[in-house]
Amino acid sequence: MKTTFTEEKYKIADLIDVMVIYPVGDEKRRIHRRTSKKNSEKAQNYTEDGFINTWNRPKQEITISQGTLNHHAKLSNPEEYFKINFNPFLSITEIEKGPLSIANKISYYLKKHLIYSNDDFYCYDKQTCLWFKTKQPCKLVIETLHKYLDHSLKYYTDLLCEEKEETKRKELQDNIKFYSNYTERQIIKGSMV
Image (cartoon, rainbow, N blue to C red; front, side, top):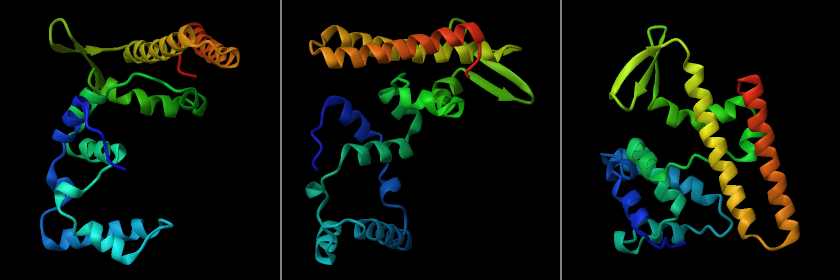
């Protein structure tokens, strides 16, 4: 599948370090090729000639999926990748999986604003551009969780406004109700469960 490049995708492609895709040294390249071959062999339409032809293809002819592009960009430069690709959306599935799933999702945003060091938490103040010691890191965690929930709620509300079909509208209303109820529980309990 060939990727159609938009301005955003060019920015992501520019983040990729060639050394991530093709490690230094012939031995590492051979290991990379063997790993790629093992993964390719799992495909139903795999042929030895097809693999060799694809592997030896000139760079200009190589097609890449968006997932592969994102994967290599994230490995090459995670900070810049998340600046381009940041999306504060929590899916219902992630919420239903529980606090660990939610924590994994919001951790990227939190690590830019909250640091744990020597048994103390430090928060970043955007106005002063300084870090300060805090005794209540949970406040920032709850604020971040609410930011994600609000973004997710807005996403479904916008979809509901555009939707005409009644069955899809009902499904979107149920999703909005789920996020609203979850947000209310967070305010009442003041926790992530």
